[in-house]
Length: 493
Ligand code: SAH
Ligand code: SF4
Ligand code: F3S
Image 1 (cartoon, rainbow, N blue to C red):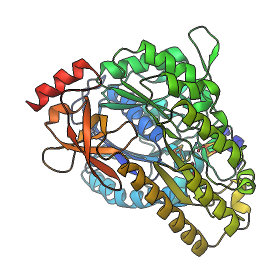
Image 2: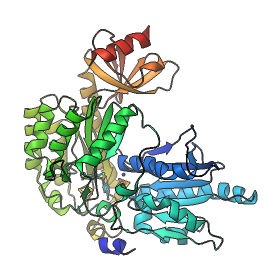
Image 3: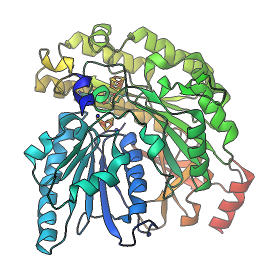
Image 4: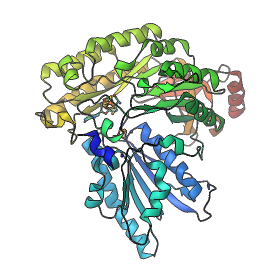
């Protein structure tokens, strides 16, 4: 796949679907309120982008709603990473078509737009395949949404495709955030990828690697905390390749950016970053894990495979031993650090012995949790034309790997039984009176508590362990800060 093809005209947890809703009204230029439904697929960067799309449209009278029924505009913010992720978009379009037709029968209009990485990769082919789609755009052009809408609503019935990689930086054209993100917020600091792993579409869908300046990141972080976020996760497809312009005009790495945010954003209690590449774990970033109290002791560091031959064929630019040494250095800097990774099984040509090397690596490292996928050939990527491993073999390897990863996750969770950990509560649970938060190691922790606790970091004792979550009880006496202790004591009174 040639990135140039896209530049002529311009998201682990992948495959989960998030809908963006905003019940409150948003002030803006237009008085007529229009309902905006955004459905998000893929990675955290898409979640961030969806929130920013809503910000772009807020001054034009668009208010997010949580159902496509009756919506004036529907945006599918899509993911192209694996075939299944991309195909979901077409099923969703099939479900939306009758809603659009119902609205048209009432003399009203629903604008149906496909944005994100499928939009970027497939462009006008989407309209050819699904003619009810009015508009296609990519991850780098959503700041232009208002003008795209004007074009798409002309009487001529024009279909609009904007998949450029524009020369202007979209971040310079985005308005300030129109709505708070909650206790835990995402902040994109780096975009795109120049690594070109042979299985991956991201360099083609997101474009070249770019970093935002430190000042812009700091301003956005300050606003997010002022709007109520206690935790910020810095995002980038290759976030640890960050090389933004610093406050002294020199180029800063991610370690320095983390120090700067920890020291200059008052009220910021927790920092995280994702997703990182093993090649870019430099000394300053590893030292940051030792030196920055706000930086959480958890790192998602995808390795993909434990076989050197496969890593070379994937163009990962590191071998298994270098990855092991990086983990050793991280553990020397911060012995309690918990690790996560991504794995691909059944990469073209992977033998049983090479798969066994992945199993050995996982056994050696010991992960707190991880994501694993069957290799999915992506059109235009180099690995897609290699000779493929059969589906049954892929299924068997995935099952074996997932069994091991599940056992490691359960063991990690069990090791926290009885421990006292600070938990950031960010949402109500499924049951009456249940509140859910995150431990420093990204585990979900469920407690019974009043809703007022949401937004606080509170010390909890872990009293129950499940495979995917923990049960805790709140300790009111000791918390991460005196201010929180008071909040929690009031909340629990
Ligand atoms: N930037 C991150 C990964 C982003 S994509 C990194 O460099 O690690 C998220 C994950 O999807 C990848 O880590 C990989 O495990 C998986 N993935 C990407 N392309 C894939 C493909 N063609 N088939 C299966 N899994 C894939
Ligand atoms: Fe994809 Fe590799 Fe870039 Fe990650 S580093 S986004 S896997 S090309
Ligand atoms: Fe998917 Fe694009 Fe993210 S392909 S994983 S939404 S960068």
